[in-house]
Image (cartoon, rainbow, N blue to C red; front, side, top):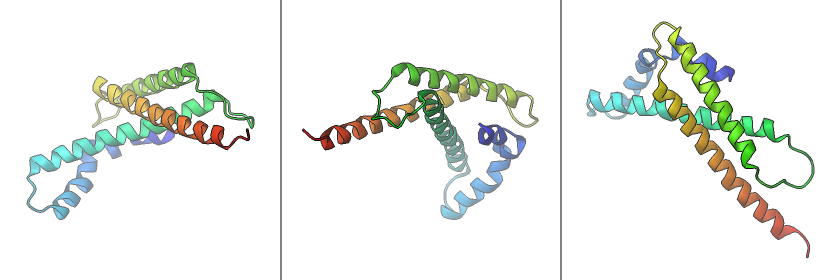
Amino acid sequence: MIVIFTGSGDANSFQHTSTIFEPFVHWLFPSMSQDHVQTLHYLFRKCAHLTEYAFLAVFFWRALRQPSSQPPRPWNWSEAARALGLVLVYAAFDELHQRFVPGRTGQISDVIVDVVGGTLGLAVLRVCHLIWNRRIVRSLPG
């Protein structure tokens, strides 16, 4: 959460990251139009939102699950739903925070992107959980 909060400051605004990202893309693809470079920059930033909130959802899930040293417990949808609820609350808080940062704007669409990222993170976690449990069941004697 500290990493996300820090990233919500002015130093990581679209205007500041464009001074690094856009020249790099122009260097890689010199003939690419400025419109395409800006579109890539926008998509890159949204993918960063998705990724950071996917990790946050997994971290929330892990904290809520209260793991034990016993054999793996079955998947609990209420734990995943609570983790996603916390992602929603924090994403809304983060966008509200950005409204008070010069050069930043808080947008509902970013909250939606963040929740989608959290959902994707939990979906990947669920698939990994299924694979892990299948391997454990196969390795049990009998």
